[in-house]
Length: 144
Image (cartoon, rainbow, N blue to C red; front, side, top):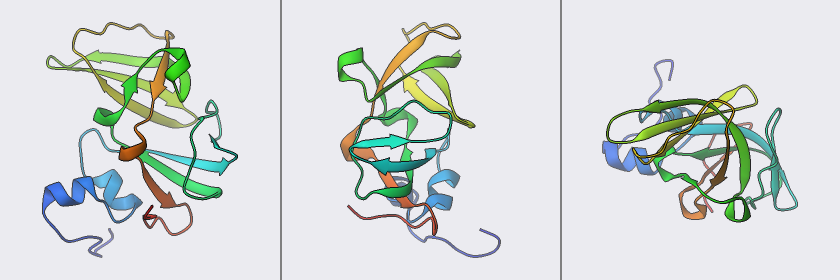
């Protein structure tokens, strides 16, 4: 990052355990979904986003990170949030569902058999054990 090494290690280790926001967004394709959120009362808020009903490691301003392949589409009762489809792309072995949350594109890797259209509402489940939390000011990873 501007000539400064952010993390050393094997690619798999860095991919699965990024030290900070820069590394999380740099490694992987698509890049890790990163949302600036304000956490309180078992819910997250971000500008232009639906309320995300999930608890965080601490209240306040955080960056939530989650990889596209770790997300799941589900029914409304099991969802952490719902949003309309922004784009849908069949990749061959999978499908990429993109949502627009605020000013960010939020990508979900789904089954190749899925078919969705622009504006169709989907319900998203976040994997508690595959969420990454970063301090919003420093960008450093919070260890939970």
